[in-house]
Each structure stands twice: as structure tokens, then as C-alpha cells.
Length: 86
Image (tube, rainbow, N blue to C red):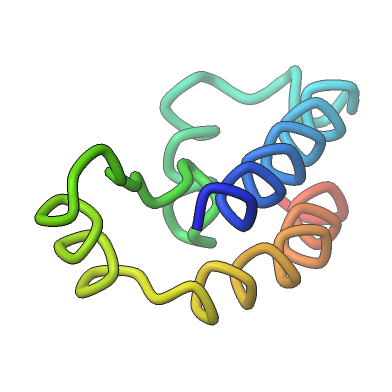
């Protein structure tokens, strides 16, 4: 779970950096950026808590490892699409 989340968080960060490097993104107001990221499910990564067995099981109930990997695989495409349109 930690490895999958770390990989996903790294891709998410790369996507944000890519967006921030575009002139179009820089011209948007913070509220517009927030709305776009939220609308396309790339605003933030789902949180995980793995400190105790209870917390880990609660995390797994909310986000399966396979779902986290699917999110991670989709991030480059989602961010790429956001760079092309507003």
C-alpha cells in the first residue's frame, strides 16, 4: 500500500508540475484551478493510514490497492488532458 501510494503521489506531483509550467494554467485564477482539478479527480491523492492494523484496514475499505494503481495509471492522461483544455 505504501509503495503504491508513493508511486501515485510522485505521478500526481509530476502532473501538477507539468500543469504549472504551462502558460494557460498560470493565467487561471486559483479558484479556476481548484475547480478544474476537482472536476477531473486530480486535485489530491486519496489519503492512506497504515500505522496500525485498524487504520490499515480502514484505509483498505476506502481505497483498495488495485484502485490506487488504477488511479496512478490514469493520472498522466488526466493531467495531459487538462493541459490541452481549460
